[in-house]
Length: 84
Image (cartoon, rainbow, N blue to C red; front, side):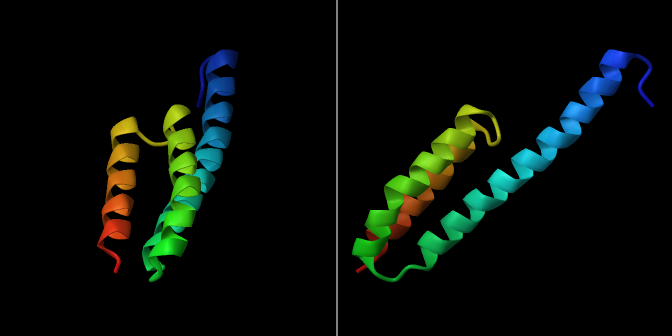
């Protein structure tokens, strides 16, 4: 239990932020999964900027680490380049 009003408020904020971050992290994982399941290179290339933008936004507000964002974008780009 929090000992001060400020600690109690921080706990409440942390809980609501965790829910918010979890939602957006899951949304990003779904977007990455969907783009990796696409078999058509042109369609994947069309989706790539949207997915990168989403990943960059999450890294900017520290939902995910900036290096993790770079690794995810790199993996998606490699997958798209490997498509025939």
